[in-house]
Length: 116
Figure 1 (cartoon, rainbow, N blue to C red):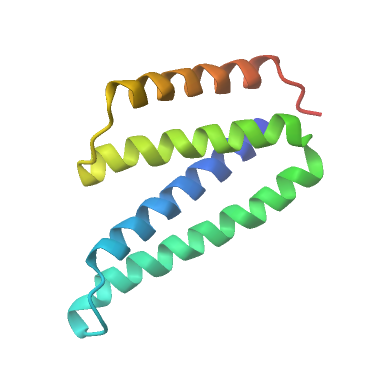
Figure 2 (figure 1 turned 135 degrees about the vertical axis):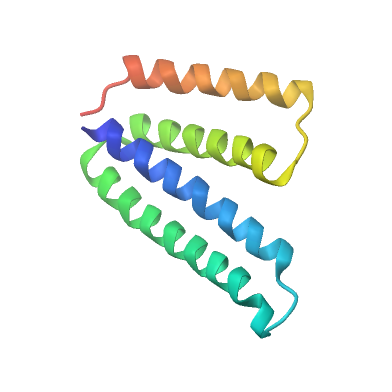
């Protein structure tokens, strides 16, 4: 059960960061044409806040040695892949290799780490 909360928290956190990135790229001042940007930024901040509350709950129920690497690893993967897919950001071959290693580490910690 804890790993489900960890994945949900990490995805919400990553999505919040991506929405904040979207809003920060488009914000040019307060005007009626900026409503979509403000909504995206507000939703991103809300998602980031929700992910923080989930994180506090997870830490109260799960060892940090298990939860922290999983949460950070999944969040990094979601944010990196989302930035490539949504914003056309580029990653070098070494960054892709690092992302693959990160995913392998998350799988190993998830499979063999102790959740309680």
